[in-house]
Length: 184
Image (tube, rainbow, N blue to C red; front, side, top):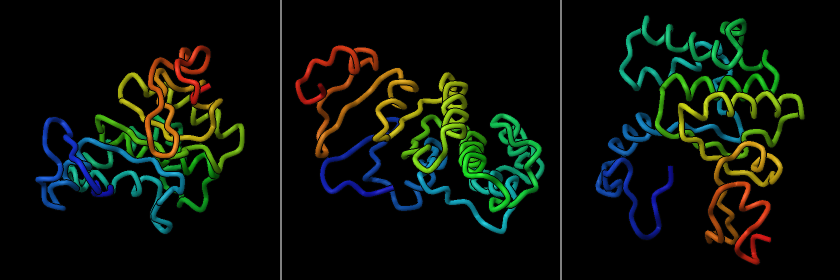
């Protein structure tokens, strides 16, 4: 979402800095799904319509959008809440709605920023269970301060400190036998 202050990066082999703003947006919409800490749902729009919205940018027709959105809502356990507004959903249901909105687009990568920080333990468990269910279909990157959640949900962990990568590896190794003193 942000423009790099230095360096360059490639996404799917494409130099992102050479793309226009619209080109970057199209690439993001096709390849990356975002689940934010704050839900960013449209308040007076049904759950189904919230999931359909990014599918418009994917170029799907109305019937295709509704079918994909309905399937995504079922995948996250919200099929029976399709016509409810976000305000009629619990925090955990709203976060699952955000995940449905992402999986409907079928990105290559899902970026999750503190996806459970505002949720109670039961809702957190449901989100973590959902992440386990979909992680074989998507590369999921979670940014979290919750070390227990990272240990439970991640196959690989990167430990960062003050903006620098300290250590990266298999989660069990990072948590049980880290190589770096800073990680310990």
